[in-house]
Image 1 (cartoon, rainbow, N blue to C red):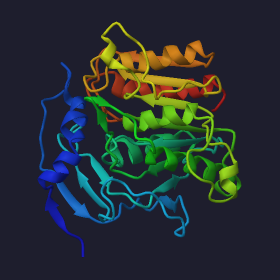
Image 2 (image 1 turned 120 degrees about the vertical axis):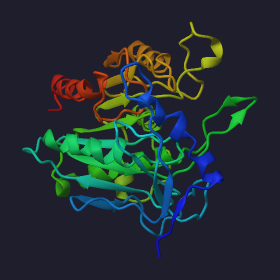
Image 3 (image 1 turned 180 degrees about the vertical axis):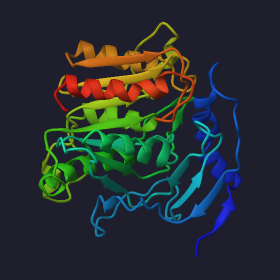
Length: 336
């Protein structure tokens, strides 16, 4: 039987991104006043709408590393404050990750977008940065695939400095989704050479890792794992965890765990200058590093927009203009 409850203090800590991250969508001079709503959690596994086909990433026989919450049952809930005047929702305590496939509503171009929602690695923002993105993608004649990856996974600190976990569960899940899509390209009616990724916040960080990883980060499971895990294009929306911000504001040095590959795919970066969660220097440092490696990189930077706006329209132009920028860029690189 499902249980509804207001989120307990321990979960409020785990989902601290709700105030620190998603609230930024309302923090600009032109945005409406911040509207808080009660945060409610429901025990149960997230399920897509009828037009989405949810597929497990791993066979049940594969023993996966568990998130920080161990065997805690999966749950869904809503965060606060409102974004674009509406509630946003999340899934967490994910132990069996999935990908949900949405077929194109326009003539099928063969291209596919793997969507990596944000959530601070505490949860997966399933609608704001997941299904709502897919609603737009499928209207462009693309297949959309939303990843529900293993969370929560807290990043440790050493002497007060954030460190990357040695094993990044979300990256394993994202790479596995990529090879499954390539293996099943024929049955999904997609082009295995036109599978890209779009990531938001924590998901954007995962997209940067996918782009630059030279090899799979988990032991092989089956024949699918012989295929490439690297996306054919990458869209990075309000990313973080890349810049070594201990060096001061004039520094654009990447964190020691960030590796840049000359084989990274064409990349589009989207960011707002007034993002107080993920400083504009984060994507700037990444863009410069890609450029230095000879990788094609484009940036679309707006003065306002804050953080975690998804595709929900506000008074900030970025919220309504960036999807069109993505569409044009995909045409420019030959993916549409």
